[in-house]
Length: 161
Image (spheres, helix red, strand yellow):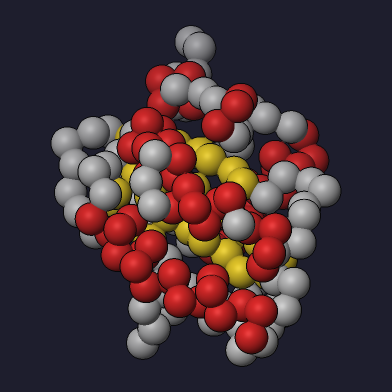
């Protein structure tokens, strides 16, 4: 994990439903890109942390949301840093080809939320945020790129006297 002087960081969970298992030949072009894309994320400006399975280079073997659902959980210094990596780097080519490998989601598959700097979100925490987004729509607790909130808007408010 990298360190940052910011008080809050942005956590991100993205889930995808596989069309085929990773060992299917139709998935080979995606699997080949995992290490380079993860390395690019790890060295991207504003990257803080990403979930990896113990003893593995990534989290693709973890299946907390279902046997055919892969989770991607990461932390970034800012929303802009995550946006830049997602849409202004080599990662964009993976995004453009996602329908080759993943089923289309009918409900939200990406959730963002602010966390205190230094906090590492758990998968359960992330899945709860996704469930909140799906159930209640965007809020300061769980939002998307198109319905975002600032860290200040998401900060807990002191109780009134």
